[in-house]
Length: 459
Image (cartoon, rainbow, N blue to C red; front, side, top):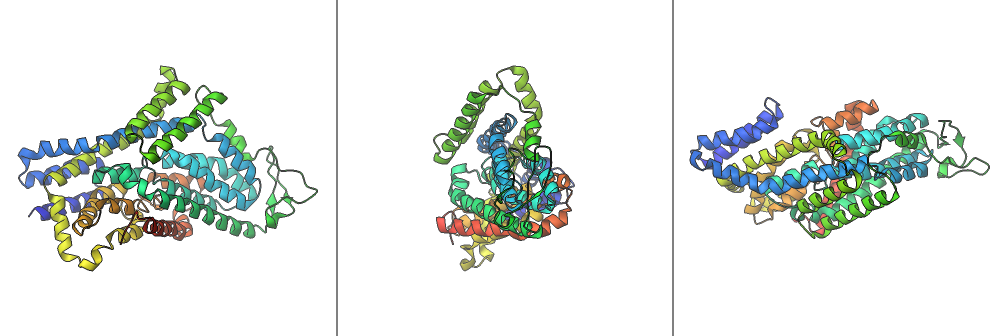
């Protein structure tokens, strides 16, 4: 009876979210409450919900201040010098432009917001791609690969959902897959190199010089990606760097402020990797310090909150709503009973393969499941089932973030950010998916193998 109510709860949640008949926020709150009342838990319901909200509170705090911190760093131009350097290095070589696109996307995506990542990278590179005659399809594909891997960061949507759904911390979900993520980043750079070489061959191997005023011209030595003798040196700026210079940068400015931001961000990453303090505490303190140095005046701080507060409220409210679902499923023992029911029908030999199967299917399922439906509806059941087979439930969370709405999100029609990427680049969504699907799926496979080798996943 309890297992049946649990499956009915999950099924109703999935149907309503996938058909978009009701908002995810309402589904997360009202569906579990409705089935809990139906099961006779009315008297205990308040306690279940309160417990669920308490368990997700640290995650909600962390994601709120992480979004604000990295949004501030992007707004004050922390990554702009690196972006300019990459653009100057790339010059007019299509292969270098493609690799540079990946590098810049990897940096900008640290803010955990796919929409802002696409806005910045496409704005910086699309004029260069057009001037060189490169296909915008290459731009959207490479940006998708890099942004997909970086969406695994703990303040990104998928990982924070996995932590909230399983009541785990970043040390349980994210840190074990850091080596696999590093391998994924290397794979993305290699894939960008191969895609860029193909694009350079398509253009006849010419290297184009981009001037400050937008002048262009073929350059010798193009096949090797080097400048030929007797030609003018590469210009100090490309069209993309000019656009970047024109982008409004807020805050005090100055070399000492930039140096402070670099040191603070590196220290924050160090705290994350070595777990020197709770992540939510680290982000609260880091954001306060960054705000004091960059935007000391209240009026400027209000503008920052107005600009990025919408993202914070949207994500945090969703995390707390997820606390209602997880609290009810856990308190009523629905999740335990569902796992036991699945264990009874899954062959013993197949139980150990559950994390690997989850990882392999995670990326394609991004085209079918919204992140909320997958992480709050599917992952908890799989995790509990894995635990019943003697495995670590955290492995399911790790497996899921190797593809579900990470490498898969920039291809998914279920996320608004995807349409920003293809819309700004004027690329058809179907063509974009066809062009980059296998590369993105390959990223998940590569990271899955790395996770198995490093012990993040087991069989």
